[in-house]
Every structure is written in structure tokens, then in C-alpha cells.
Length: 272
Image (cartoon, rainbow, N blue to C red):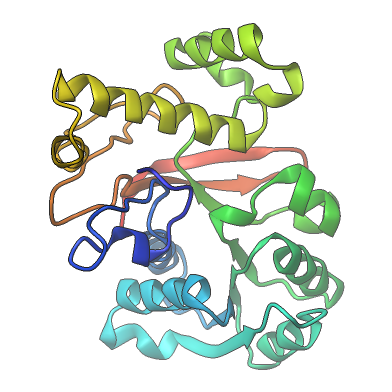
């Protein structure tokens, strides 16, 4: 339950009813990017860099679904890469060469950092969207060069523990009290810690709902009937909802942009 992934295979109850992901489905996230692109650049020419596996193909499928059949022509370049490749420099160059003014980087951290750096070094002024899995400032943006990452756009669903706006937030205080008692100051701002805390609170909710019946069937029944659950470290307006036919726990995200120092949320919470 609540695996740290947005891969669609983990939200497929028809084939894998005992496994449920936690993160927003990658297709959901890409639909949200499509919605934002249509709102802000309706005549955009879009290039997509994607990992040639289920992770990357989920983003590509979600983007196309979000744009709709009548807007499919907005995608002017699809550039895939294999995880065995040393760099994605040539793919980014080909994306620029296609005349795109929007770039979606559907890549894992190592390749996302390369794509961010290369797109900047080319002097390409495209609007750049990057997968939520590659928004770590320490692991990705610093590796690319924070000055080269400025202006990046992504989407998020979790609170940033380093953002002072949450200092007086009840959920953040609950999280901080836990970390202060059991962990370190470094752990406080680690996105993996935030995921683990939220997922644990979600699991505790499921177990409480089970009452005295901790059978596999009842645990699954409770995990697939969560309604409007608010977790301490998710953004306001984001709620956990599941059903026996829909294992996508999180379907809402908020847009954010990187200002060279930190991610800044903007706009309303969007649903994919």
C-alpha cells in the first residue's frame, strides 16, 4: 500500500488489486501540464523528452490525453532516451531544432539535470516543465546549476518543509514535532521524509478504519474507500480519495516555478 510511485501499473486494480501507489499518477501530472499549457500558451509548439519505459510513456500518454485529439499537432517533437545512454544532449538539441517553444522533461533526476543544463546552454528560451520526480533542489537543480534551472515549471502536492509559509501550519507542526523527536534537522526538509510521513499517516488511517478486523480483505476494503482525507504535509485543497475501481490516491496538484533559490507555488490547485 502507498508505494512511492505514480506509475499507472500501480493503479490498476483490474490486474493488481493488492498493490496501490501513493504519488499522483504520472498521466494525471502530465494532464495538469497540458491544462496549464493550453491556458498560458494555446499556440505552443511542444517537445517532449521522455524515458523510454513505462515511466516516460505515461507522461507522453497523459500529455496527449490532456491536449485532446484536436490539439495533438501542438507536439512537434518526441525524443526518447534509454537509461543506458550517457547523456541526453543530442535529444535536447533535436527538440530545439524542431522549433519548439515548450519543453516537457519527463525524466528521472540524472537525465533531468542534463536536460536542464543543456537546454540553458543552447540559449533556448522555451518554457520548461519538469517531472515532479526531478524537482529536488539538492539532487537535480544544483547538479544542473541553479542559475540554469531558474524559471522551471513543475507541479507539486506536498508542502515544502523549508518554506516559511508553513511555519504556523498545523500539519507542518505535527510533522516537525515527529522529526524533532525521532530524526534530524536534515531529515526535516528531505522530500523522502515528507512522503514517508504522509504515507504512514495514510496507512494509520486505514488501520484505524479496520477496527478489530485486520484481515487482508478488510484492509484492502478500507484502503479502497478513503474519502477526502487530508494529510498533514499535503497542500491545502489536496485530498486523498480512493475507490475499488480507482487506486489513484492523489489527483490534484498545484503549479510551481523555480526562482533560482526555491520553488514558489502559484495559481489554483488543478485536477488531472
